[in-house]
Length: 409
Ligand code: AMP
Image: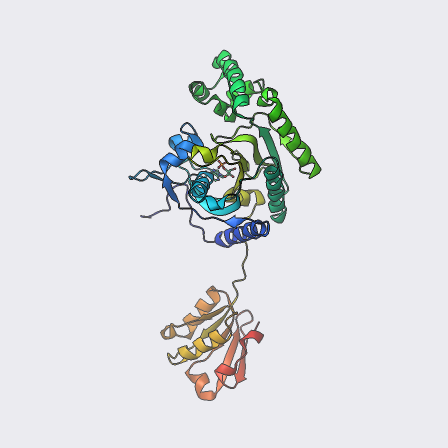
């Protein structure tokens, strides 16, 4: 075939109704919880993501689709939303949500696409730990709505700048001392942001990292207090959490609590992160805005669908067909369709086809009943109704426009 869908991207046809349902479910839950929808442009200045997500992150260093004039297709939505909030400070404080496509030039595989949808939300201007607890409750509420139970919420605490500085020097020393046990890729990261090495899934690294120092052991008293309070509140709210002391997430803007929702159904293979988020109190200032506390979460729609083991949902596509061999009938059919606007009615305009072909088409598009009003019926003052399942025809005498389509069923 000459033109194909670009790699890592998909035409959504049979899945479209499922996407619509998930979006409706998500928006209903969020709007009922006081959130407001935000839609930002698909294209943003490249610099926005360099400043926020970080130059050294995989996303920025190699996964962005760039245009000739320095714009990129957004790889994620948080930075764009913060850009919008900084530009429009009447949005502070606000709870914002989105269901939107994101773009990353990754190597496509199961659960990893180049255009994928995220459902996400941001609590802007909300301090810890309230925003964290609210978000966790929402995540559990959404997954309950989607009947997803096989998942685990992993959390970690990245502390403040001071804590991270202290931890980084200890971690760097540990990794330098064990350089030869690291993968080549991680060795090359020793001169950059070494925190990212903790994200590595390489076998060699995973083995070494089991004995690496943990950030939770390097928190100052203030951070300790906040982390403990967060854990206590989560327990009070009956939120089950798993502490993963090596969870750092790949983006530069996180501070404080970070979380990842991990799928336990085994339906996802190696790409088992259903969603992730964290606190990003420094992002507003990094983008030239005021000091602002904020917490956000984003989940992947395609991975949610894989975890739920759904490929499509059945929508009721049953129709009533109206067919005739006369052009004059078309306005009458239109009138009938308007009268029964809530019914799923298909009019076959192509009266030159002949009845045989019109029936064939009606069957193909799932018409369960077909109303026949051709020249013969008009002359006899009758309407014929064919049951497409049984093949039986019923004759109704009277005007076509008096026919009650709602009783055909
Ligand atoms: P991130 O913005 O990287 O924290 O991603 C949040 C969530 O989006 C992940 O946990 C995945 O569920 C989903 N996601 C991220 N990248 C992709 C991708 N390339 N294809 C499909 N889903 C993705």
